[in-house]
Amino acid sequence: MRSTLTQTSIFGVRGLLIFALAYIGLSLSSCTDNRLGREEILGSSNAKKTVLFTITVPGATQTRALQTSEENNGITETTIQTVDVLQFDHDEETFAYRALGYSIAAAGNSRTFQADLVGSGEDQTFDLIIVANARAAVEAAAAKWTMSTNMQQALDSLRITVPATAKLSTSTAVPALPMFGYVSNTPVQEGTAFVKQDGGADNSIPLIRAVAKIEVVLSTKAATGSGSVDEEYAGSDELNANFTLTDVYLYNQSLSGWVVPKIASWPTDNIATAPYFGGNATTKKADYVTGKNDPIHYTESSDNVTANSVLRSIYTFEAWAGSTAGRDTNVCLVVGGYYGNQNTTKSYYRVDFRQLNPQNEAVYLPLLRNHNYRVTVGNVTGGGYPGPDPAFHGTTANMQVNILDWTDGAQHDVVFDGVNFLSVNQAEFSLAKTTSA
Image 1 (tube, rainbow, N blue to C red):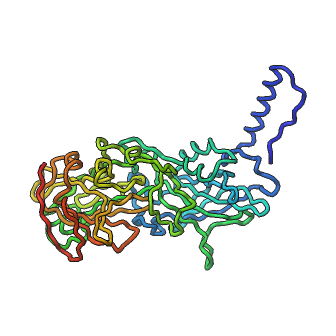
Image 2: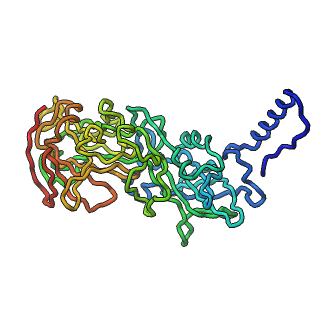
Image 3: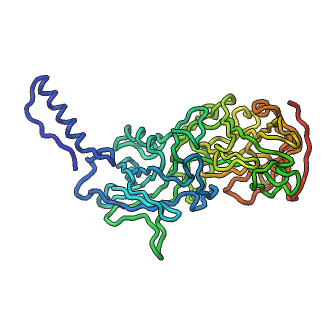
């Protein structure tokens, strides 16, 4: 229903003040707690409709993030704290309405909630964007939207920024992992529901995390000094014969992330293939990273660090692929621990995100939303640098790693000893290269 004001003969400054106050009062009275107060789009055919949603979280749909429901610093990877539904006119590609999800409940591996949306007019359909765990970003952005705001322009304003040394798993700016879902060209009518029907179609909406996950594990070879390099060792926390993991540093973490990518080019299989930076084609790596002097430090049990692994703790926003020339701004890890019989002096090793392509050439990897990067330390062949910063600036050496991006299981074992890359199919191998501090 359109808010209207019947104008009468009002004269003088006092009259103008009364007129202004009356208009503001009527405008405010049209606002409710679950929308932006834009009642002007509501008519008899556009009355609100209560819509039931079922959303599936990434772990439940295996959308390239490791399945887990274990807690990480008070949250889980599948936590849904808040839901906002953003409604855009499909034909006009403009903002129409925002509603808050309510009655959020767990339903097996899914979550259900309800939202009161604007009903479709004649031949009218909407694009719906479901935003989870990003209420503050939505509120800040939506306050500036109008009925003529372009859909992608609105979505590009959903940006989350964290302090330079913040861990995403514990940052107050990211109380739970932000996610989004998308429904295109749908009417909103009485009885509209996005659910999995018993014995029928599955109309539930998959959610996509806006962050990447990085995990580090030691193979049997690295952990014990024997065994095969492609066998993961994620067992007990007892001391290892060859290498004992103590901490991991994340260098050049992206400080900003966009909750929703470019919708027009988002793949139907929901697998990101390139990072997205809010439509800014001139974005530079250095504009969005912590800088080499502010690495994020993961250590001790509070960060899920054991002698053999770092799991469900390192999350980061999307990032450009690195380069040899720009190594000072590459997102990379520095892995620390005790090598061999040393139990008092730590060694540190730099690990870049690189793989071999089919031509056996080394290729730097971007860090993409909803991807899980498993860094397996295959073998440690010698001591590293005496500290994280010398390792970051130094030559990678004496640590062989395999990086598996969970978008393609057909990866090779990739070895980098500081000079040479090898793609191997043998279970056990050894490369030695010394390094100087």
